[in-house]
Image 1 (cartoon, rainbow over the protein chains, first blue to last red):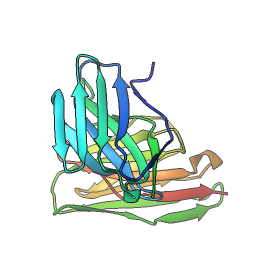
Image 2: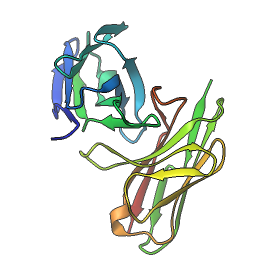
Image 3: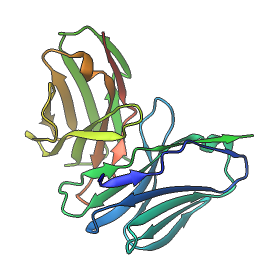
Length: 113
Length: 112
């Protein structure tokens, strides 16, 4: 079983839709959770960082963590064509040292006008 | 603010040739530094990390090596490239063990 499993997509949605991106993880000791956005031929860009269960909101983005179910989500409201990118979940802690992160495989999102 | 620079952006090298990719971080001191490789549809694979000058840990045995000659400089090298070394190489830094990582814009390496 992979440590982190991400819904593979790809997703294609109309502009203005609500997007839900999801990951599950296997190690209950994981402590902190991130979402990255990656445009084509660029490095991943940090979108959200959280270390507790519950919701964290930043503009149109909401990160949700459910440690009891080992499930994390990223919601994008009022999606825009500029949101078209690959989204990566990343999880850290849990006995891994030196800030190493375990990444999901990524979900390709396309928002069409 | 902190910035990370990675170069070159694109590189085409023949099999058997050497490799040197460089990464530098500005605006912070004593960062943790990382080299990842990203293959299409396969996520990010951690290759090396460093918590200080001269301290390198390898995650995956392979044809590559890393060095950290200065606090904010991280170098990925190979003496002889293989076709399988082709990929997108990303450098990243983090301030502590539980902080998020910040990535450079990567080097797309094609070995021919």
